[in-house]
Image (tube, rainbow, N blue to C red; front, top):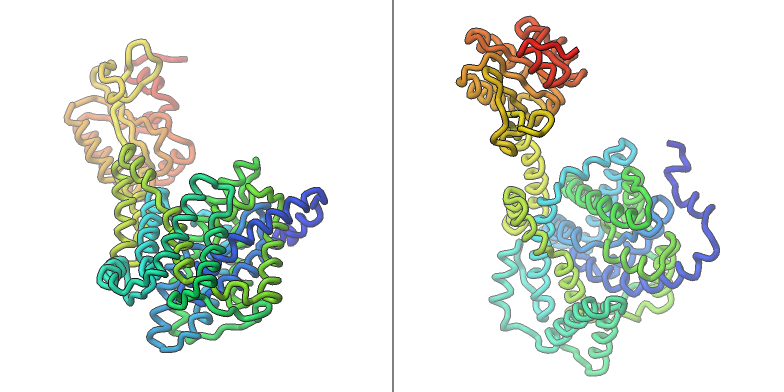
Length: 556
């Protein structure tokens, strides 16, 4: 790939059309009304000062505009990454006793995610997104949504809870409900209601902005000193900072960065695919990783934390008329101007309102209909989704992602281990040979069994294949024909099994025959020298040829 292709921003700038500018400016300003409160809320969700959410938003938007391939994708602090960041940052900070260290830890985490993303992009490892199947991703996200919801409830009610994990959060909320601050819950619950109602009935209205402005006004007008607020924000552009951590801390952060990278890649590819399909564009997976990597590296050097794409913020930008990444740049400039010129604008932002923003995001993450659909369509995948959900709920966010990945991989292995297999027969009035499950009345030729095995023959399923053939051999046929078109590979373990099985069948007067075997697979069989036992003549290009040979007919 030529150098300029790694910097799509150059090509985008060269092809930018002046008529797009008014729409990008308006979309950028609309987007800013969402970026500011969400950035601050998601920063606190990650266990960090609210200002870091704004720092992160500025730098990631600028970096992605330069290195990201999508015209409309919006990056920033993400509700799904917040708990993962907090899971590794908060325990270290509590053990160290230095709250200020949280920013350095989160920044190093962003740098590691950026590094991993960049390496994966250069190595063209976009396929790693496939490690999270849809059912396990659904279960993981639902578990995350529930964890976020209950983790933010105490803050919404005006008190705090010390605990780790979903069950501690629920228990702490129940036992601490007596410490509720009425004004806090009125602002938090009221703000949440405004967001949800406007999202449902007036989706074009900026519900979060309306709720935030109302909450700030309530605190100011009614002098609600009992409600905790964000307080004054530092003035000025995010400071360039090289974060420093110990080697031991670096190891823990690196492990967390792997999980965050996987989740971010999966989310990015999914979101990019959705919006690219709407615009008739193609997703460049490796370049997307490069763009996300650059965004994380930039955020990490300016007191930021790991970021990902946001489907909701991207949808807002698109709905507002965004035509290019200039929309994101407008958002970055607007946030910067706010910090430079009016840093006190949000000092009276109530903490319960930030909790309401996060809870609204968690409700948006929850996909009950998806779980119901899996239950109706495929129970095994519903079980996988449920297991991933339980993994997050019981073991925590970071172990939960490991459980989700493990389940996805095991599901693939299960399908290879126990693939679909069936006997084929010739139905009346239908051409060809078909599954006996679909056509139970099909004709079976005396002494001939046609068997199909829908998977590569490998070490994991060699025993399954052998047992199926042995079961068919009890019918005492003369030929067992393998409809081998679905068999895309034969490894050495399976080759040894086939050699032993053929000798076993030959001793019973049964021939093992192959039809429709792919040429590359046939070459491997020749390389394994299986034709020492399997008759070289017992390989046919089609099932019709195999059947004709059995019946002594000549199709030529």
